[in-house]
Picture 1: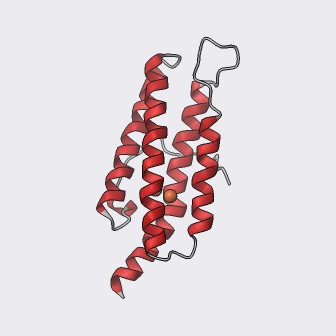
Picture 2 (picture 1 turned 90 degrees about the vertical axis):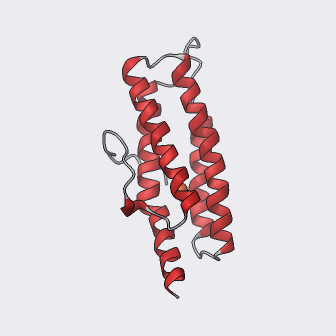
Length: 142
Ligand SMILES: [Fe+2]
Ligand SMILES: [Fe+2]
């Protein structure tokens, strides 16, 4: 399900979001950084090439991150892998539909793009990724 709940103004990574995996934590921090960049860009110059460039970085980096995370879930026999992977796929599909060719008539409003990207990452990490984190933590204790 694509969440459209309210997310904070800017995203801040804290220890409460750890997945007990350095690589995944680093990727989440990097994603938060990119999302904060696009939030700022939307405020200063939304319909710009820079806006489109940051969005494409978020897409590329997100794809790389999903691969890392799904590989880990597979290696750990995480029971909710299918559901989690489905959310990643839905996100990629949604983002692929954004049109940042601001010279065309049917471009996607930058504010809409930011709202979706920020909200999706925030809520996905808070709900799905933290469920995975609990699973990893229990495995580590075992
Ligand atoms: Fe995830
Ligand atoms: Fe993640």
